[in-house]
Length: 109
Picture 1 (cartoon, one colour):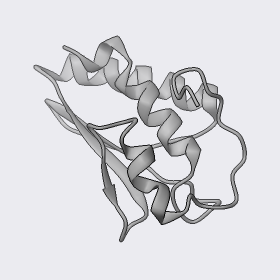
Picture 2 (cartoon, rainbow, N blue to C red):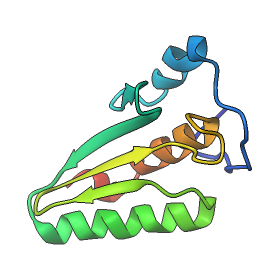
Picture 3 (cartoon, helix red, strand yellow):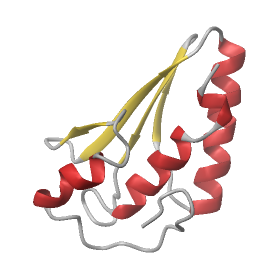
Picture 4 (cartoon, rainbow, N blue to C red):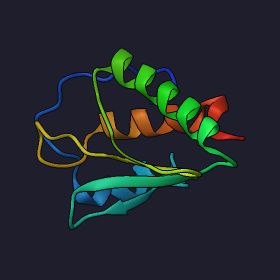
């Protein structure tokens, strides 16, 4: 599956744990938190303006995919985390959105 071109779909079942490494290999900058059933990545920036440009770009992805991250926004960084609440853990949707966030030009100040 090409995560950059994929569209999120309603997911009710989580990915099998034995497939987690395979999915993470497609978004290598992300880390898995199996205890909290999520993936996360911290994006660093030079200033708050760049952080907000990134946050707004991620919001566009979230709206288009109808899949929304948790965001921790600070002066020079934004941490995104994805999980699929309806499934109670990680699904393909989380990795689709992670890959699309990684590809944003705003992710590279």
